[in-house]
Image (cartoon, rainbow, N blue to C red; front, side, top):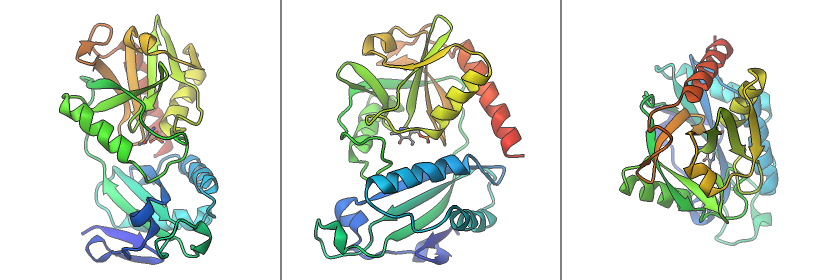
Length: 279
Ligand code: PMP
């Protein structure tokens, strides 16, 4: 039985329900976070809280809770779960109002937090990805719940036997449908700059920090589709998938078609960081 948090109460998931006039349902009017739990510890709590704050500010909402309050909700939920590897899904919508675009009528946000087991992943053989035009909106730096484009992109990828779609806007890579992207060429690592077209991934930022701390040459820059297709290695990153090597792009091998040495090195460093952080 999964216990969740909904508007001030802890209750079984099966009894948690919301009003059909919730603006999350009628407008997709809300934001979310996915926060990894390893060894029953919250990983990168402050970074996720800061991104939540930024997302809320961008949609003109106040954060309903302080960091201390959020932490205590997460910790209470972590107590209820058996698996040591989890993620916390947190969603805040603008709450229940009549179906009217006007946001000033919304007074009480809906706050939902749910722990979820993380599927044991084995990406050591690499995944297939496709490339696709970035069909999303212009505010991709907001972690908004309106994910229809990403859902469709993942479906298209899956239809072609791939796990992710790497998105191209005006000839340049932005990110994956639900991940950030890194490429390697001649021993150097590149990732797109953070801007309005990219979600500032917590895993992305951590990987950049790990690269810097270990003197691995890297650059945050624009990356063309051609550079992606000619890369020696391609990785995608996210909180639940971590660092995943992409060994086939559009059914063609990336580099040798095997997982790369740089990926292995950076993944080992990431795993080490995580295990020390979550001791
Ligand atoms: N970009 C998008 C569009 C995402 O949805 C996600 C998370 N699922 C990421 C990047 C990765 O972000 P994080 O490392 O914080 O999970």
